[in-house]
Image (tube, rainbow, N blue to C red; front, side, top):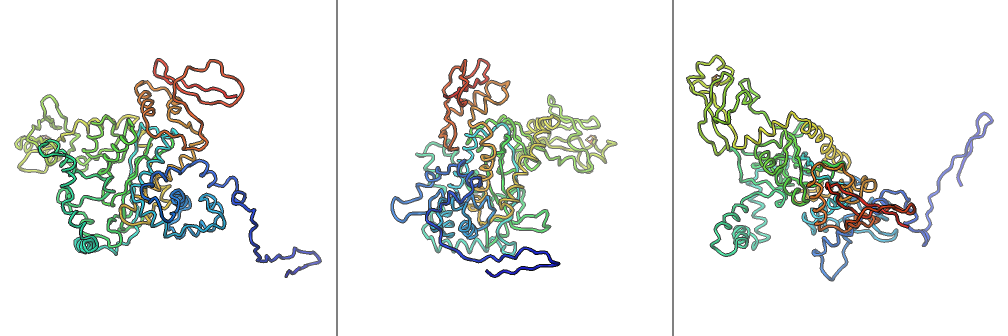
Length: 582
Ligand code: SF4
């Protein structure tokens, strides 16, 4: 041992130690089970989250024989590790896993077992495709339902811009790049190029069946023309041009990531390539994310909103009472569709008419009986005609009246025509939403939106890599965002799962009794119809019986409490039964 000692002023100091580097082979009886601390986070994750369902999801993608692949459960566990450790590459992930005992334990790989290669993870991800990642996300949402974390009464919409993994310098003229891509693809897949040209015709023929059913044929053609944001992985419909406006993304295209489009960065003061990530979040305490969609950055929030809303509603059989979003969602089309569906649209309506120095539309009073407007001077603006392009009715005052009016300078700049205003075909729905704006539920919903959805984006960006996508193209960034959304929901499962009630029926029973009996009944009936009922979400979940039983009169005072069932009282309020086991 090479060591030295010093003494100063007659006093003795500690001798400096020098650590020798010497490693012996590990003994056979050392186990990872003992080496990983009992309170390690990944032990908690393994105990709470059963991922065995993913084998069933991906089973059709594997052959019955041949070389054994990496376990799909291991693949998804690695994706979760990447999320929790905020890592940006599979190569980095595997080097960290090789280095950490707790990660090896979580994946089920012993100290001497070789780990999967990082390139295998890329190949597995490409084999699964977006569909498997969406189904994985949805299964996690189902777990949140089973754990009673979803309220389903209020839905919150928001979107955030996320930078793409490509530089703005990689953009070229879209026509040039697409021609080159087309040539390249035709060279590789000559047979498929012919199929793409008349892709719609055989699909529609298959849907409508024999010729002659004109009504169904028309409907099928109309449906085929509609743009499906989710089914088409958020792709923009570039052939649709509104009001002659050409987007920058219609003209320029990145050769590195062809689906990313230019966006303005608030903090960075320059343009970047990016995407728009849309979230639908439940209004319950757990803030469960119900749907995720990534679109090119130039797709504004309002465009996929209705599809996200109705998909969430029908996929999860929800009966939302209200939908909340900022001013970007307040378009006439969205407001009318939401209100027609019996849902309150708590959105901020833009006030285009009130911006200039002239009288806004709110200064004019509509007389529904006579179908005319009355101006601030008391004159009438009569109906002039319909504008189907703008979906509005046009009302105008007489030019002679306006020319003689003392308020003309504050009302119109036209010298030959009188003042005119538009009334949307859907104006009654807009007026209904304007009526909400003074109410406390509306103000509360907008306040809640700021602390419900926006912090979820902050969390994903600051801690889990959503500030910049690591993958490229829409299919892959959608898969990446779905994984992040699913893992954020898993965090809620871990946080609330043990403390909150375990079953939706229990949640309904513990919730304050609703004045509307149908609300509880519908939730209860819906849960009974649910296809996804296995209670394997939490491996140690209590067994639950939905069979209504009579309330227990005198429970025994020994043993553990056990939830035994529910029954409905005469007023529709749930009566829960607890019994004690011996
Ligand atoms: S300018 Fe015409 S519409 Fe405007 S206040 Fe005067 S009379 Fe009424």
